[in-house]
Amino acid sequence: MLMKVIDAENAVLGRLSTYVAKEVLKGEEIRIVNAEKAIVTGTDKKSILERYKHKMNLRNIANPRKSPKFSRRPDILVRKTVWGMLPHNKRGREAYKRVKVYLKVPKELEKSEKKKIAQFKEKERKVRKMTVLEICKELGWRPA
Image (cartoon, rainbow, N blue to C red; front, side, top):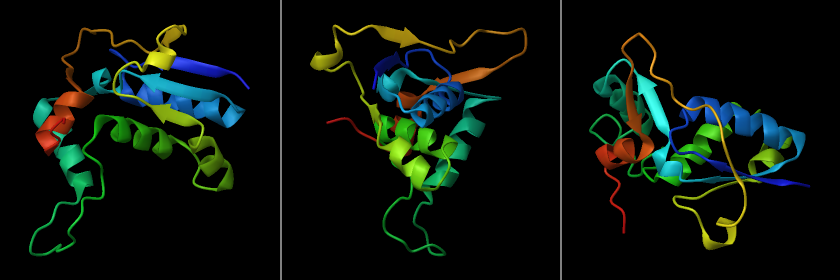
């Protein structure tokens, strides 16, 4: 079983997630590094944030649950995005266990070859981009 290390810097989160999902379904071990530098695209920053705030399922009078349903940590957010691309059955759960996500490059993976995929390319149309770190900070994540 091979282990692939993928650098998420400037990679579009959706494209990265679909690629990782396909590879883990084949039986590969995937390690994603620099998860906080992945990019989410949209029409404007407000619409990108609204999409993630909706997933947070924040507490209010109509919804008194005390915990958010969506994590504010960048590494967990990227891992949950990969989970959304996998089938929700036994095969998908087993594949999901083969995905590890890191905020920076850990010492044991520094020497390994890192693959870059799905780089963001500015097109002629107006597309706004935000990093996963910016989204998580707007949602209330504060690094230790």
